[in-house]
Length: 304
Image 1 (tube, rainbow, N blue to C red):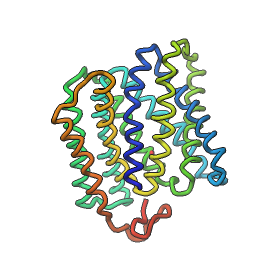
Image 2 (cartoon, one colour):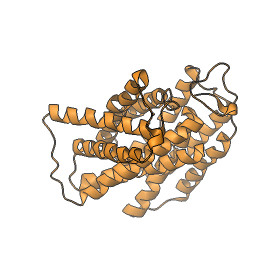
Image 3 (cartoon, one colour):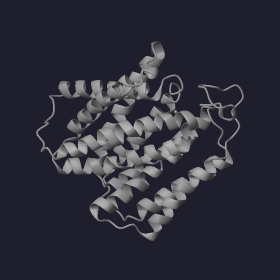
């Protein structure tokens, strides 16, 4: 179930760029988008949590601070950089820049001693990266702004740190509770920043709420719940590599909603990305003495 949950999460996240572009077309500012996204997501997750009383276990100390900090600092910063970059460059190009993060996560996890950089992982990473390149480059070029590229790389780096930090608590907190804490931290942080900087305008047409709700419900709540659940079962490198399915979904949705056509190269790239799922079923041995959270006996190891 772990790889499948990661793929569902990637599909939900893949719709976000489309929702974001449509929201911008309706006059929504990045600041308003972020505040609404995280505030609404926090409320929705709180409602889900109310019906899952088994997940309402006390969270204190370092775990609580880490969970709230993941949202207030990590997720808020990553989302801010992402949507700022989205205003400056095409969604497909931004996805290409953002998806340098699987390489960052895989290398960082190996350097930190959390995972083995096995031949299977190297092959999977190469396949996923090559497939993503074929999908995105097959869509054709777009405007390239240095500032947009830098913002996109900043989002990738922030997401890498977020994944590695979250992996240290994902096994200790139920996914719904952890997601609620992360969204609450991000909502409070972004709302406070908006108030300090003079506020933002929410005078956009009612139609814009369709895209904002889509971002909150599909590309945040559903995406996060499935991501944390998948991450708990797979670990950071596997989750990051499987997340490369996200730009495939983005390109496909752009074809459906914006009238773009998928080329044979793009289709080949999508199949190549999916092929990494098969490769990742080959599980490496755990590192001796390294257990961060409960895992199945064959997968004791260590996640955004």
